[in-house]
Image (cartoon, rainbow, N blue to C red):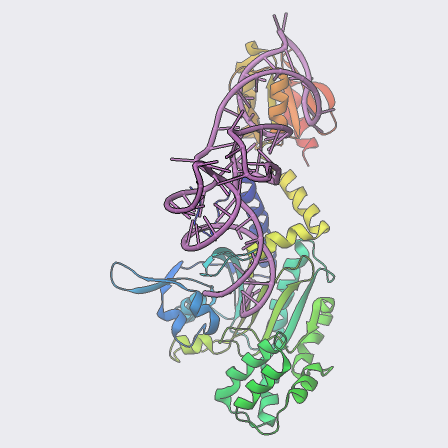
Length: 419
RNA sequence: GUGGCCGUAGCUCAAUGGUAGAGCUCCAGGUUGUGGUCCUGGCUGUUGCGGGUUCGAGUCCCGUCGGUCACCCCA
């Protein structure tokens, strides 16, 4: 019996990796004053259809009709849920809101490395603030998340763009607002398509004098005026190294209105590890105009991150030390003399009361086996309880150093050794 | 959704169309107090599944399911 395609069983080792990731996410998000919230995994299909998410994501929905004849969908992303919740509780919170969430999302896609049908996503959103500082704050949080896991500017780049730059550009050529979305779609694809195809697409849109060359010139322009204030803020934070302005980033979701960005892994042939942007109209539209809240945020997926962590040695080392520090057990009691078992069990209990992670052999076993078991559960120390009770031998398994100490000083000894 | 490659023991893999194997893991031993590298023994397979060709199919053909890579797109 295997799980469904694109879904995962998490064995303890896998789950430890997930914990490393999610604990890091929460730790860094809280450093920025973000608070955690959650919402339902299943939503009304309508939430995603209403001009909101738009585009590709609608074709990837896990949707069905429930027993009450409601058309529902597993959430493919968190933002519509967040927007719905915030619109409903607008008056209960002072602004701005700094909210984050860690939860499962679902997309019916063909799976490959770093892409699954159920994945965990970190979502961080700053709501109720229109200023560029809010954009900077959110992008700084994204960068700090990456730095926290050991990634530097040589490992990952934030490609940064702004849809406003495109709106201004299109206005010069008299391209109508209703054609903007189609046009951004052309930009989104032009990196990957032959020039003739791009030309053909452009000619289909009503315009005056726009050519592919002009488009390329614009995209190659060294300065993007609308981005300057944001870049200055990031410079002031010392995070400019991570940023690469890139007008080809427009993103597929329909609701973005301003700055958009994607964090790209430069190693391991991976894909975007995170993406987001400003969506100042989503909450307004979702609430039919009842609530207007500007917002900016991003999502980061676990599937790509878990692969990415394996690609960068510095990140891998950092993760390894986490796993060592959180191993199943710190102390393994080796019962060398069965006559002392009662003492050993009492000792185990005392240590556990003191917060130490302790295990021991549940049945009589050869000392050699017990040492193997100590190794296998990742214990730092083996404490041997034998005929010389109440004297104990304490062995550090990594170095094989052994000291002999009386049982009453074990607790003190351990607390000074376990850092 | 489109295309390429691959499905053999828990894992990694082998087997010119002719009796399904190895290494690792796991389990039990190496008699009575010391583990990562020793020795011995043991367990596990409807060769992904279903058809077909053949005296005979893990091997060839078709379908199907699963994995993987690329496209697509994105976390």
